[in-house]
Amino acid sequence: MNKTRTKDVVDAGAGGGGSGADARKRRAFQRRIDRDDKIEAGDWMPDEYRKSLVRQLSQHAHSEIIGMLPERNWLTRAPSLQRKAILLAKIQDEAGHGLYLYSVTETLGARRDDLIDDLHAGRAKYSSIFNYPALTWADIGAIGWLVDGAAIVNQISLCKTSYGPAARAMTRICKEESFHQRQGYDILWKLTRGSAAQRDMAQDAVNRWWWPALMMLGPRDDDSTHGAQSLRWKIKRHSNDAIRRKFLDQTVPQLQALGLDAPDPDLRYDEKSGHWRHGDIDWDEFRRVIGGAGQCNKQRLKAARRARQSQAWVREAAAAYQAKRAAAA
Ligand code: FAQ
Image 1 (cartoon, rainbow, N blue to C red):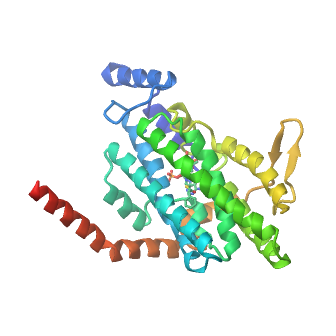
Image 2: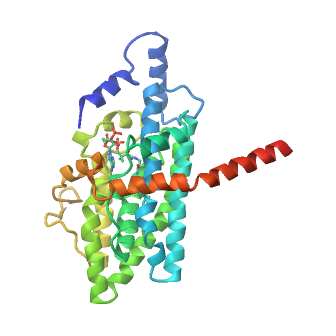
Image 3: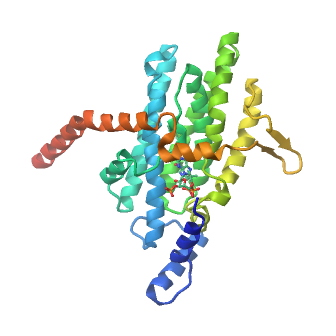
């Protein structure tokens, strides 16, 4: 990844250097950030701050929407009516998270349709994690436990993001995500206490989702394009590696309670630092997946485009109803 881009943004952004009215505004903006003031929708902000927020928030919104697809496959195959109802509620929550986040981008002047066009044309990113297939029911457990678990650790930190509307959306999202994480853990808990075949199925799912879950928290800090500037603007409150460490520290004891193993022979507890340490992450795989060559990238975008087309009538009906009510008022 290109490290000079972070520097370019720092120089162009709230750097505080330069003279004139614009530089004064930028310095005052950075002082607000340093004081932990929340930036609100109508406030002055550097254009780069606005763009960086739209980039991160829209990628997150796309991830919530595309993230429904691996789980959707299991709605018709959930092992009981209760599991089906729970999964349905979870997937609906993810749609809601996508909608809150698109709404936040609209407060920054973005147009939802443009963002979705970018996603469908392959110009916008969404989380790498959703390009892996959900092969068995245990994968639904692993997604809830590991994927929602990683997402929560990151999003709890983002509840303190400097942009007020994003911080408030994130607070609500986190409440729902914690239910998602528990439902995933509960699925794996039951499987690990079932037959040998069920336990093997749980282990197999953990083997396949473990590394992608660590990767989804973003590249190493040294390779993070936006990390330094996002931390300075408090768009992000912790670096990618710091969040990954927190996730690992939270997750390993849960793995041990399940009685499952991590597919990482180098996983160890470091007494000195008091943190768990993982082995080498395959960053080539991460780059391949975010570059469009993951197992399911094509299939995910195809499903998203098809859904937009087939559901156009719902949007048209809602717009017609709204117009009718406005005319009657
Ligand atoms: N996948 O400079 P950084 C969920 C890109 S929600 C794809 O370090 P940043 C809930 C990055 O965009 C999961 N691309 O980037 C759920 C950038 O590319 P760009 C999503 C990635 O923004 C559960 C480049 O690499 N959560 O799971 C990924 O400072 C179950 C350089 O990276 C969020 O989006 C990746 N994993 O840090 C839903 C949370 N990582 O834009 C359904 C908000 C990095 O220059 C079912 N986002 N890239 O072309 C964030 O916290 C940050 O954006 C990070 C990345 C931490 C993801």
